[in-house]
Length: 248
Ligand SMILES: *[C@@H]1O[C@H](CO)[C@@H](O)[C@H](O)[C@H]1NC(C)=O
Ligand SMILES: *[C@@H]1O[C@H](CO)[C@@H](O)[C@H](O)[C@H]1NC(C)=O
Image 1 (cartoon, rainbow, N blue to C red):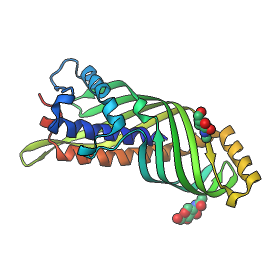
Image 2: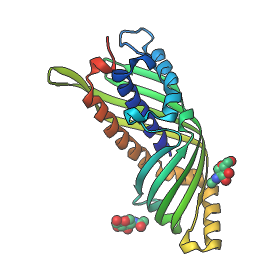
Image 3: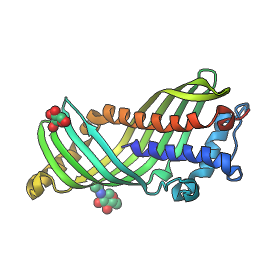
Image 4: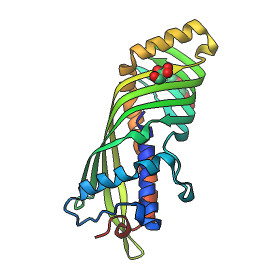
């Protein structure tokens, strides 16, 4: 469920970029020659957290509290968990409480590594789902709710420098996400056409086995998060040259 962290991080990066070029006063500027560049970026993120939570409408930066995501589709073909599912109108509460625990930038190799921690997320959305989870058939559509605590994510971004109109831009080639959830509890309403007993039994089963379920869908989720974030980040990186994003 760390998708939400990354969409939130995306909002942050967008803010970082747009706020910098238009409103540099409320941003801590980091220079690539700064011997404490990584600490500077951590500080800049920290300063921005309250802004992120409320959003900045004049710059089209949405609120991260709650964070709204219109749709996520997760189709998991084979294995112990094979379900087609989609989630709409997703509201995520808690992402603005994230901490950037570590930033490592290798300018020469165009590589960025991040470690992010989120204490807890509360999620509400509409879902539709069909398939099998750990041998059990599952089907339903309705509201779903989830609590996720102690989320840790490691992100590795591999980029390259590209030249466009005489300026150097950053382009992300690979985006890799690895995450761990400390604990999850979920509630799917209206499973099996509203059959109360089957629905309750399934919710119980899912919560007892949340770790197995999470591990099964983790690779798909990580890839989904990574590709969304790669696309979003590149939109920014392709818009602003490196000399604006990270001046000397
Ligand atoms: C998921 O949908 C695809 C087609 O969209 C279908 O071939 C497949 O059988 C479905 N899988 C499950 C688990 O329902
Ligand atoms: C999530 O946590 C809230 C607050 O503790 C609780 O009211 C709600 O029932 C929980 N929902 C789920 C699905 O665990």
